[in-house]
Length: 161
Image (cartoon, rainbow, N blue to C red; front, top):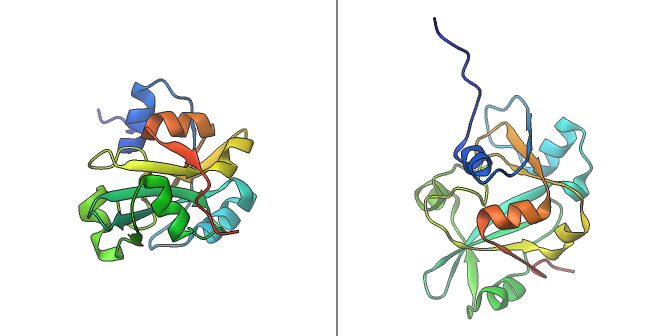
């Protein structure tokens, strides 16, 4: 007799193994939608929903940046934060090869490799934040410090004023 398997992404399995509490929120999604649309679909305040961006430094190293959905990554602050001369956004076609995730389902937890990760300092003021769960249609709600621990990240000022 087949059991209904609960949806578990790599990110969720890692959080479970670290005993980090999180809540899952799902929505119907066939194609990429941006973070603002996701927040609106789920009825969430935009201030607590964060997106995950991947960039490449002048050294060719990859970096992960987690910022509010309505914010823009400040490339100079981001580069300075990770000790690079400059960083440039990773091309959409390369996201899966570098991270193991697809556009719209990319999260800082459980990528193919452990990349240096920076989370916008604004997250520290929140009780909980929402990030992608590692698959289109899945969002995770967790404490900012728990996200930082799970992705081995650091908080920093990386967004444009």
